[in-house]
Image (tube, helix red, strand yellow):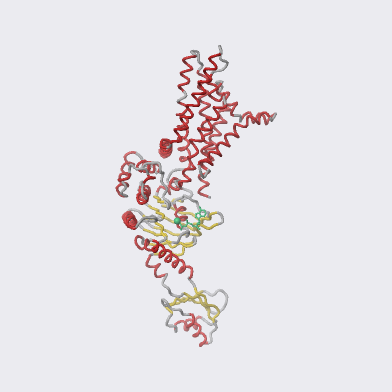
Length: 318
Length: 246
Ligand SMILES: Nc1ncnc2c1ncn2[C@@H]1O[C@H](COP(=O)(O)OP(=O)(O)O)[C@@H](O)[C@H]1O
Ligand SMILES: [Mg+2]
């Protein structure tokens, strides 16, 4: 349904996103999670065709967003981050315009406007200028616009940003109800938002996709176990023997040696355990030199910590 | 076509809701009316007027160019700049509508406004007709044709300027500069000779409008104004595509 293939976007010499690939199937509700400046908006702008990638491509229902942009865009309803509206138009004029631009007309247009007005609960402001609507209403007008031509895919960039708690709750309920009929991609820098709505997470940090999987899997991946990358100057059997004797090790895998001699392993500790010292003493006892010992997976953990810390900062403000 | 007309309708709504358009329309009619009155009363003093008063309104005076620049700049300056400023390019450019439809829809709206402004001047034609029974309609029709074609050309310039500008003021300045330079070609004619002079002559809008007001419809003039319009419309379209590659 949606396939991104090594999308890369540079803003001049500054990196927007780099080499992002993923596949999203019909019916999924996916959260792009990442701190501010991670590249969520850029990724969404690439999917919606607002920006073209420097490298890679994205396919919407098998239509390249660069080669067949008009067809690809037809399948997408997009709520952009700033949710710009024509401030001097009335809400009904705005929806009428948006419907027509997306190819609706006549009775069908009228029916769709009626439907989205009901669905998004904006009946009260239908004759007001969009510019005079409150933030909560504006957001719902934006979602109504995204929905107007009944696209199979909805892309919502930070849909609850700047709303008060009651509005956040309502918007999330609305999105959940929409996910029954639409594939939904939303972005957020708040972990609890992903927990509340999404079935799958794409974690983006500094322009890179660093995790793709279910929420459960992400939490497991972020458990604070230690991951080490070691090389012993001995054969594989001896190496396995040493590692098996250390209780705090959860599991380990043999790695391909890169011409440096000895045998290399990647080692996962039990949660919360530091095993470096124990490995050292064990090897000392066995008279096996350690050629290398690196701690891995820092970046993933750092990304997660950053998201968590930003979230707690935000909660303090509220 | 429906999508294109949706853009046109939206732009007309913006004109309708903004005071700027009314102010310009009124100013346009006032100045043209005043001009017409002065010319008519001056000419009525001489027994046999050497030229038709209408030819002076259509390109025969400095006021014509001033008014044409002002009205085409004002109706085009917000077309792209405002979308950019408000961020609405993001919703527009991610909709299933082509860049060409967006550009043409906007062009059409500005052109409709321009045509409406000139339609009011038909009143003057009827007044002159009342005074001058043997009025020749040929030059009048060709004058209107020239005015509409020049309007199209200038609107396409204004549209392009607005597409590449961050705000309306910058857009207005760029458009006015381009238009003034085009009108300035007439001076280059004085200081050149031979083939260069011929080329400048071909691009001289003052000569072209003079032809139209005399009832001469020269295909070279039509080609220049129409291809100029097409050129700036194409540039406007390209500017939208360039945004995506930025
Ligand atoms: N128009 C732009 N020009 C230059 N840099 C940009 C532009 N838009 C985004 N960036 C940069 O690209 C990076 C990713 O931004 P963005 O996609 O907006 O992140 P997010 O939506 O996750 O907060 C940031 O470093 C940001 O500063
Ligand atoms: Mg963003």
